[in-house]
Length: 175
Image (cartoon, rainbow, N blue to C red; front, side, top):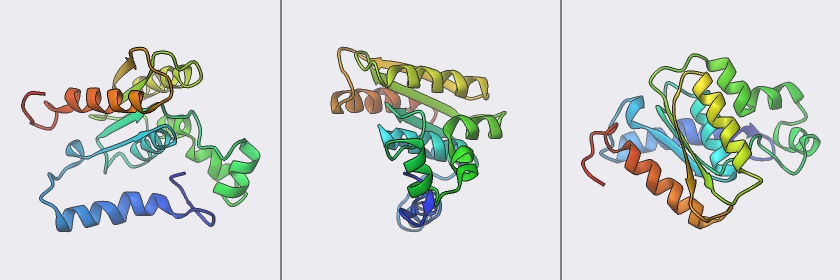
């Protein structure tokens, strides 16, 4: 889970401060939020929408492939206890739908959601998250990976399709 907590350490801080600072110092990376994306598959997709919606000044692009609707350690009680140090208000504030509502309106944020065509569990979540992101003002795309479920074929399809769609935004040519 991408939160700062006793159980998981400061994973949100690591991903939103430490990693970007290291990249800026050590790599010839483009600057500016429209050039920065956060992406993930499954629970990583959940992290992508959480951090993208929670840190819009850092990430102008979000790629959520088969993300979950909420961060989870199995059930809400276990998640609140383990991931949020027992703080239900912190859990509720960290839900992707809560972060989207709190950050509305998002301007110049592009969110891409992808899911396996045959993934009956995650597909409704991806559709719900796409609609919520669009309602929050984000430019959204939704893709289904043909004939796949919740697997790395979907991950590969979703990331490949998303990056291809984003090339023009980042000033990159062709596919």
